[in-house]
Length: 219
Ligand code: NAD
Image (cartoon, rainbow, N blue to C red; front, top):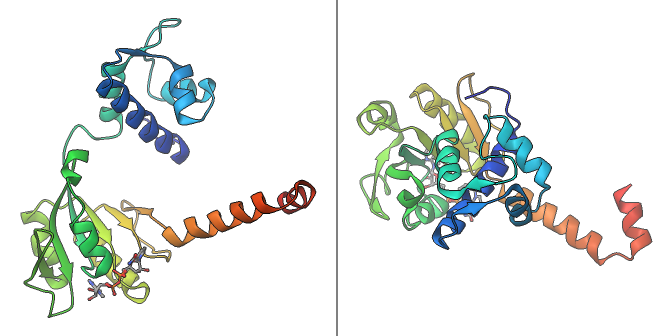
């Protein structure tokens, strides 16, 4: 995998993959950068540029074969294998995620939950057994955990992330609205629901403004 791929490119690859999955479901055999661009709401140039980081796909003028481009994108994104996921923090959000149906359909398999609340440890939520966080080190290898969902309160986030990194888990999907520091070799992807709401408030405010005022806001 080439290094230095912009994170926005990776996000768009995920979008292209979703579109290709839909095309395959609709039994459409071929597609083009124009079609992918239209569905992904980017330019065809952007699609070609994103794909060019990884080699050449398809033939000039004849577009791409849906199944083979989909297979390539899955390989590039690391989705040609299953990823084992543990949830650290089995409160409201952790339990809702444990209940998420068929995550394994998307190549991610929930294998365990972790918490520090004695009332939760030993319970089963959404089919997931909840272990004490102290067990993380021991169970990471046994359960082959690759990724942790971090769903603890803000004040517990850094310590929990330290424990996750120490246990050897290299990927954290961070649902906690705070920045966490991790050692080199550990990747954190934030899922910031509050930031999304604030961006939405900005765009709704801007849309509601008369044109000149909106131009002033954008400046
Ligand atoms: P919650 O209080 O219901 O659950 C937090 C859980 O984390 C509890 O079970 C607690 O015992 C556990 N915990 C505390 N310290 C821990 C530690 N060191 N290690 C392991 N577990 C620990 O909170 P929640 O509503 O599920 O939210 C969890 C996080 O997700 C918060 O940071 C919140 O801001 C964020 N979040 C929540 C929602 C939501 O809709 N509930 C949405 C987006 C983001």
